[in-house]
Length: 79
Image 1 (cartoon, rainbow, N blue to C red):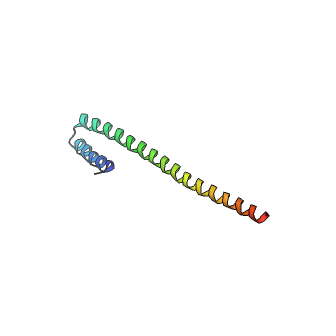
Image 2: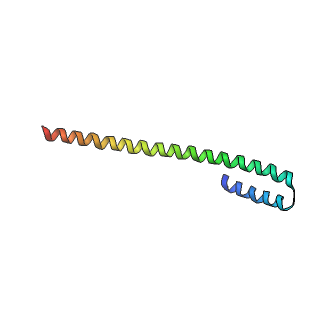
Image 3: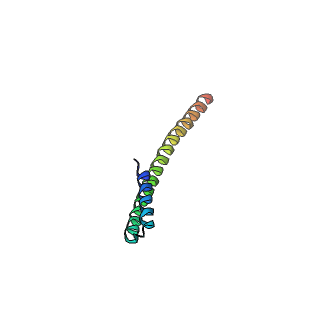
């Protein structure tokens, strides 16, 4: 079970507590869920950043390679 699925189950549990008028537990669960969602959000932001850096690194290296090859070919034609 992934973290998002677990949070969704906890939200359903909170809704049941709200329906039963158990407000103190309802608010405590709500705060815990918000904190967990914030941590999940931060994790995905970091993941997105690292994935973007990896893609940029791959594109950068292939671009440098193609530019180097173009300069090398131009130099050979000038000889």
